[in-house]
Amino acid sequence: MQSVAGLRCTALRPFIASSRQPALLLACVSRAWGRERAGLHRATPTIAALKPSSEFPADYHIGQTSSVPLAPLCPLLAGTGQVMAAQANYLRVRLEELEDAAGEVAWRAGQAPQDPGMPLPGPGEDTLLCTARGLLKKMQTRVMVGDRVHLSGIDWTSLRGSVDGVHPRSSVLHEPRVANVSRLLLVFSLAAPPFDPGPATRYLVAGEAAGLDLSVVLNKADLVEAAEAQALVDEVTSWGYNVILASTETGVGLAEMADAMAGHTAVLAGPSGGGKSSLINALARRATSAAGVDPTPVEQAVGEVSPRIGRGRHTTRNVTLLPLGAGAVVDTPGFNQPGLEGVPPDRLASFFPEIRARGERACAFANCRHLGEPGCRVAQPPWARYQHYVALLEERVAAEREEAARAVGKKARQGTTRVKARAGGRRVLEAKLESKTHRRTSRRSRHQQLAELAEEGMEEV
Ligand SMILES: Nc1nc2c(ncn2[C@@H]2O[C@H](COP(=O)(O)OP(=O)(O)O)[C@@H](O)[C@H]2O)c(=O)[nH]1
Ligand SMILES: [Mg+2]
Image (cartoon, rainbow, N blue to C red; front, top):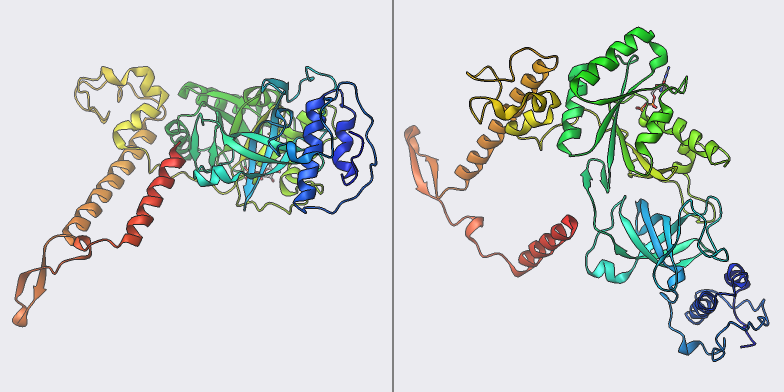
C-alpha cells in the first residue's frame, strides 16, 4: 500500500485527515479508482504515496482495486436526507443523518458527531445534488419533494450523492405537491388587503380537509390599531383555531411562528399579498442570525443553487422546500382560493371546529345538514361563521349535482340506442353501431393502461 498514483488529490483530501478510519479511506480510494477506470475524469497523479497507517488493513493495497467493490462502498458515505427540490433528473437533498460502518446513525444535522474525526459537511454544504439510482426508477418509485430518502455514495468533493431508497411518507399534499408536510400555517393580512372571514373560511376548510395540523397567522399587525388586531385575533380564536399575530415590520409573532414550525415540514398558504414570502424571509433571517451564520435572504437561497453544484436557477413553478432552522417550509405562490373539489357536502360540517364542538352527531337526524331541520343542534343558537358554512354547503351540493348530471349524460351517450332525425321531423330510435367501448382494446393500449395503473399505485405508496 504505497502507491496511489492516478488518484485525484482532491478526492482524497477530506479523508486523509480521518485515515484513522480505515473503512472510510478505503471507500474513498476505491471510489476514486472506480471513476478513474470508468474514464470519468482524467488521471491527475498528484499524490505519489500515502502514508501507511498502522490501522489500515494490512492486506489492502491501493493498487488492487479489482478486489474492492464500488459504491455503496462504505456505510460512512451513506445517510438520510430530505428532498428539497426536484428538477429534471436531479434532486436537491438536505442531509439530516450520516451512518457509521454498522449502518447506525453517527451524526444528526445540528449535532456534534459521535466520532470527532468524522468528516462533515461545511457550513452551507449540507445540500447535495443527487440522482435516483437505476433500481428506484426500475421499480417506478417516484421521488417527491419532501420525501425522506436514503443516500449512498456521498461525495463531499462534488457535493453529490445517489438516492437509493424512499422512506414511507407520513402525508402527501396535492397542492402544492409535497410529501411529509406536518404543519400548515394559513397567513392572512389584517390590512392591505383587509381580513375577510368568507375567503378565510374557504382556506380553513381546505386545510382541515387535507388533515393537517393548522394554525392561523394574522399578519401586518403594524398596519392596524392594537385593539382592532386583538379583536380579530379573538374572533378567529373563537372559531377554534390557534392564532399568531405577526408583523414583518415589527417582528412580533416571528418567535411564535418559528416555534410552531421547528422541526416540521411546514406549508405557508393563504391569499396572495398576505405576506407569506416576507414572513419566510424574516424567519430565515432570524434563524441564520440565531445560528451565527451570515444572514442570507431566502429568495437567494431558493433562486440560486450553489456555484459548487453548478446548477442553474429554479423557476418559481417548481415546488421547493426552503430550509428553516431544523425544519423546512414551502411557500405557495399562486395557490389562490382553493376549489374544495375534494370536500363532499356531507363531510363539510366536520371541517368546522364550531360544529365539532357542538357535537354534530347530537342532532335528531344522523344526516342533518344543519339547515334548520327539526332537532338540529347546530343551526341554533347563531354563531359567527354559520352563514359561511351554509354558503359553502350550497356550493358543494350544487357542484355535486352538476357532477352527477354530467355522469348521467355520459352514460346516456354510451347507451345502445340513439335518436335519429328522419324526413318530416320524425325522430326514431336506432340501434347504435358497435361503439368504441365494445371494441377490443389493442394490446398496445392495454399495456399502456397497465403501466399507468402501476404508476398510480406506486405514487400512492
Ligand atoms: N406593513 C407590512 N407590510 C407587509 C408585512 N408583510 C408583508 N408586507 C408587504 O405585503 C406585500 C405582499 O407581501 P408578500 O410577502 O409578497 O405576500 P405573499 O403574496 O403572501 O407572499 C409586500 O409588499 C410586503 O412588503 C407586514 O408585516 N407589514
Ligand atoms: Mg409570495
